[in-house]
Image (cartoon, rainbow over all chains, first blue to last red; front, side, top):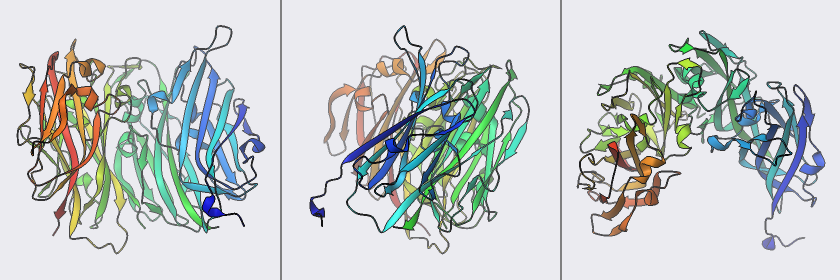
Length: 306
Length: 295
């Protein structure tokens, strides 16, 4: 019997890489995401890095977080509701630096690199030999292939816990809304739901707005005008108003964090949220058409017996 | 279960020099139950793209019935929107100009967010009433302002406590147009209550007008002068005159203090060497919370 009084948690970092062609789906090397010491660990944080070669037709700031989605599973336990855009997991803590244009040596193409992270609501216990499997989907919003890296920040653990806290993330991605006229969309019952028999303790709603104009995919640099045009309302499956009336998108999901932090809120078992989006026809005059796509993410955790 | 809760309202006709109260019906809980408010979010839009920082020109006063959440000596309790919470993103995320955007005219859109130091429990039938004002800022057109409260419904069977934690923001806004130095008074950053005030942070923001545009960027911060701070017992908080941006650093524009002011105690601020451009505005807010009895 090991002397647990002398146990010291060690940090663990695991990384896997893949290249996703447009409109494709691919997993990553599972061995690269397994604790090499063969011991159990606690997963604390997941980080994604997305990169494409620079192209003048796409610009120097591309919202790749809305172009790539990730599905996570721990054995038979789903950690996501299918594929969730990688920018819909975490809070936007440094929005200006999420997308960066990187100069490289003359013989190598410059790149655009986006980075996102998700600090799990509670550490996730990963038993010895188990892997949190990550599968990715390129949503086909841009033509070039996207190189991605997924990294797990974890630490070793001495013993298995009595309760395991499983994170869960889901996302509602609206249809592209026509910016030239009034438009609307609504989520379905399976988008933002708690499919489990346990309550879901909510960490946050995330709110992202992807604007497509002249081939550019942007979330900043003037694109907040799209968020200004969009109104959102939300109710739950009991008919209770969550967002009582149509309010500006960024007043429900503040721009300063790209999220609505929900520490303490709980979602009933087998319930869901309905999101209603309404876009006004703008008073300003357009010189170039553009479309708006809104992403509302739901992130939380549930407890199961260890 | 404690479900999320969000209400909001907006006004689109806030002219320069005007004060307006939004439709408060939209800011009430639809049920006669208490709710928690964790965060207040603001969004603004100016008509044209020549405004770099409207968040200092648009102000908000908040009160919940007889309980005030904001106070300022000279401004009737109106606090600039960027003095509620720290700067947690880059300045060009806080205020987004739409220079390259395909519309005419190109608006300026800004955001502010106040994560309350303690969640505010709003009793049944009550609401937090905002009043919005805009300085005579010489920018064209009406401003659009939206305010929202984000929080949670209380659990079924929740019993109202006898006392609640109420957030508080007070302001010192010296007049620096004709002088390069100023001192706060005993009515500025003071605890006006008969109970201790838990001070979470001090927020320092500065903006100046350069070539017709209002900016709170690095140019404004450079001219912000030096500051010394004492408390009302004569203790040195900042002993020697120190750069404004040494105290309220650029990345956050805030100093998380974590102190307690006894009843009627205050912080005294003296600023000097402020060499601003046209229409300088320097504001220091004190954000905290105190206990209040509820009926």
